[in-house]
Image (cartoon, rainbow, N blue to C red; front, side):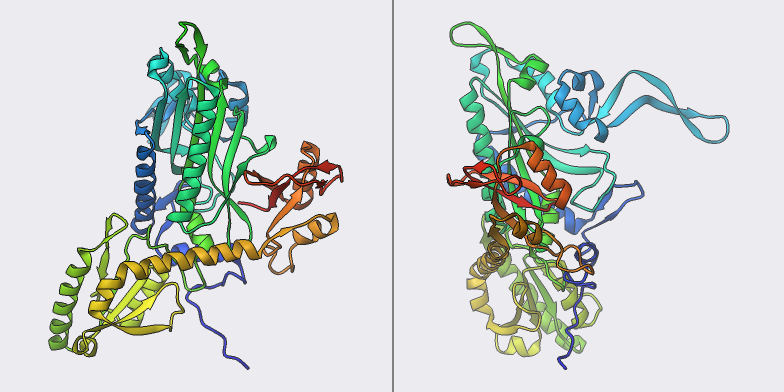
Length: 507
């Protein structure tokens, strides 16, 4: 009988994927639930990942002409009421402030006081409050385009929460732009969609589908919503970014007008777009294994962890002197316009404990250095894209000269694994029976495991979309931008269709 492999994370992905996800977060010390129901505390390791996401995305925004600003977290209720579809879409998720202060209740406690004349909504998204400012900033076609982004927190009153994926409060960026013509606004929507896809693939090592949402899945108040959709290892989809063409709907609600070149006044065309801390959840679920977190080198908080190996004070002095000199050489190297971050783990723990600590945190490269390695001017290397026991010796000078290539190779390997997962579990399906079987759990003990993504025909009917959602908890993730015209029959009703859409279960 084969010996059962012991893993750092229990249960494994195959045994219980949702609990595995939570255990990876805990083992990597990324975040924890707070005392406020549905909210999370993002710990330093998790927050540094967010900072790296933020830094790289922010650079991409600025390269395309966008600038950052900040707007209030409180939005008057009347602002939401100006755009009926928008307020209806978010009404159930809104947290509402009704009082301005607390006062003594005469029983040793506190009670709300100072009732507000108008309730304030805690920001679920900022189209309405930003639109109020834009209406003052935009007067002439010379003021356009106006390209604004803000990094902020938002609050949406979620019933079922999961760290990083769906919490009551989360962090995000939201872009808001104003344009003189429909075409310019549509071009902006497309620009950002492609930017998000590039970021996902280049930095997150995450292949994605780009496409348009159906009317049922569209952002409240938008004319069109576009998205990027990624496959997680349990074969569910995760929406990793959205870009909305808002037409003139919000401009009319917020009175965003400008004088055109002919001297006539007209309503502007607007867009909005965003990604959030759920991208960290995507990183975990797309790449990690049963030993813990796996991070792409371009977003990791630390690139290399060095573990000193010694038996006495004399060896300690020798090893630490070598390691500090080695560390300084590595720190001078630039990796994709950033300094390499090197950790030296000199805690009073056994070597094996330190090794597993860094494996679970997902650091791309681990180096064990002891007296024998120093004699040979070498380092003993483990890589997070390799098996835990698959370690080998490499010349120290060669490592320094090759470290950026090693990290790029790890980045590529992680991406290719995710791409293989996407390809292996995406299928064209034309028969309804096969479609229903594909999305039926493979066994009752693990209901999370099912087929994956289905590329199937859809007639465009909301009734068919709703029936599949009710029957299987499967939704249309997007109508792919690169979908080829192809005659077929709707997977639900059998009516004619001219292209395929992406069906999947999702987060």
